[in-house]
Every structure is written in C-alpha cells, then in structure tokens.
Length: 398
Image (cartoon, rainbow, N blue to C red; front, side):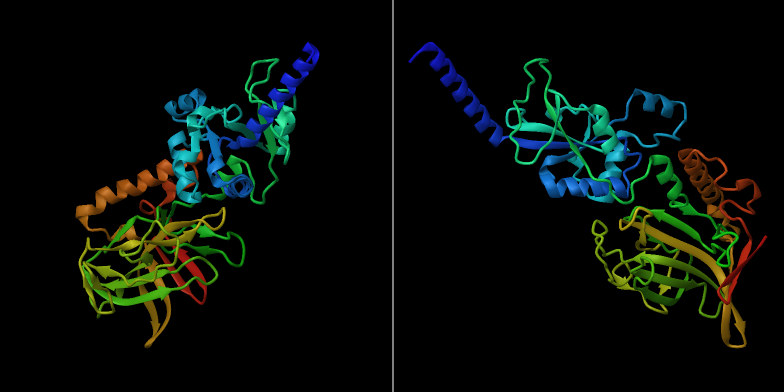
C-alpha cells in the first residue's frame, strides 16, 4: 500500500473511531439564569428540556456572585434577593427539581466537572432563549444543536477550547422578568388585617383575618383555652382548599369565637401535594364539635394555597377573632376584630415584635418600604379595629 493510501486509511479509521465515540456520548444540558426566583415560565422550559433530554441529563446553572454578595452586605435585596442556597431550596421545594441538579456554576460557561460527568462520554448543551442564542452566535466553539447529527469532538482543535452546543428553547407561557414576578407575589407571605382588595371596584373588600402563607409543614397550635364549636372540611371549589376550618369559643355559651381557617391533620404527609382529608387530632384524639382544647395544643399543619405562578401548593392559614351578628336567632353577618387587641399580656410584647419584624423583613426583600402602612395601623398588623361582614360586603372601622 502506498503511503498516501495508508494515510487516507488511517484518517478514515480515526474518523470512524471518533464517530463511534460520538454515538456513545450523552448530551448534558445546562439551563442557566439568575432565577430570582424561578417562576412558571422557567419551570415550563425545564419541563420541556426534561421531556426532550431526560431528567438525569438536565441541570440548572445559576450563581450568587461577588456583586450580589456585596449588595446583600449593604442591605440591598431589591434586585437579587436570594442567595444560591435559597434559590436551590426554592427550585427544589416548589418545582421538584432534584436538588443536586441545581449547580452553582456560570450560567453560560458551566463547569461539567461539577456534576461528575466525564467529558469523554458526555457533551455540553446550553439551553438558551432566542435572544441569548442569537447573541452567542455560532462558530467552532459554539455550534447549533441538531437532532440526529453526531457531535464533533469536545475540544475545538483550532482554539483548544471546549466545544458546546446551543439549543434554543421555546417561549413558555408565564415567562416574566424578576421584578414583574416579585410584584405579582406581593402579599404572599403575610396579609395584614384590613388590607383592601379590588380597591375602587364593586368587589372591594377588607381582609378580616391575619393570613399567613408559609411552608406546608408549618405547625398550627390552639391559641386559647376553650371548646370547639364548629369544624368543617372544605373541598376545593373555585380556589385551592382541601383543608379544615375550625371555630373555638371560650365556652359554648360565649358570643366570642376564634376562627382558624385552612388547617390539615398533623398525620398528613406534607412532603406530598396530594389531598389529605385525615381528621384533625390532638395527641391522637380526633377533634369534633364539643372537644375541649388548651392554648398551645398542636393540632395540625397549615392548609393549602396556590402561588401566583400556578399550581404549586404552598401552605396557608388564617386566624380571626369575632362575633356573629344576629337578627333574633338568625345569623345575618359577623364582626371581626383586630387580633392584636386581645392578646394575653404574657405574649403581647413578643407577638407585636414578631408581626413588626415580618412586615419590615418583607418590605426589605421587596425593596418597597411603603408596602405596609405601619404608621397608620391601629396595632401591629391591623389597619382597622373591626370589620363588619354582611350581605357579601365588608365595612371596616378604625
């Protein structure tokens, strides 16, 4: 065989070997971004990538860099409120992404070694929006991902740089920037007593409760010594419920009551979002009408709520203090009262401080010091002293 033929034969053999090696390689997809925080549009992209490449091969790439650390040190949380660990917790808890698939690495230059993948048997795919894909362009180092096209060797021989492929993701409904998202989730954590909804419309109403939206595994305790006067299971109808409502009175003869709305059994698995209608219990004994209870009794977890990005169930509970309005023996409405006005002196100071801290912390995170109108509150967390509810209308009063 002549040398030229031998050279061609060797080249062909090497190319065939490269092709066989390429066939064995697995795409490792990194979907990069700030994720402050992840929202419905992001999650839609993630699900698309999982359906296309498999859950084992899709990773979230995000950072909490020096600039963000300096902003936090200066007390500025307005643009990047979450650290890497907090972002990872949100992405894993709210959206079910495997936590070890949320990687602290540069979003557009991810380090494949951080996930323990061998470059010899894997190749890098960057999942990009149309704008970023166009900005990066295409060349020897960044090439377009194509179905059923064998990848080139990982290293570009001209530059010595690791080669990557860009996959342009489809636009998903629900996408928005971080500032829009943070605006949309206002009041998700604590809705104060008297906050007005649908202001200036015929449906304007005042919130007659303290409403907390918190992790699903948050405990709920009995707030007073008394007796259960009413307990009711609430199936989902119009908005997410599938949880219990319970009324507690100091005695059955009392006009006063505390209503705790949205609670699930302490025997429910709160790592699951499946409906759990197990009965409420205290120390293993089922709660029914007439059950006597003590302040501090643990009787359940917070109930259910849906976040504004859709479908991800958070925890929620509401507490209110009030009386029925009666016309003879017929109930025609209710009057609720600011819960902070009826605290026992032994807990009053600590609870007032707690409510003030919740509001201040949320305003700092939101970057809006005017979100709660603390200066005009009648007590911490209370815009009004009382709210009358009758005929579908609320009438607040200072």
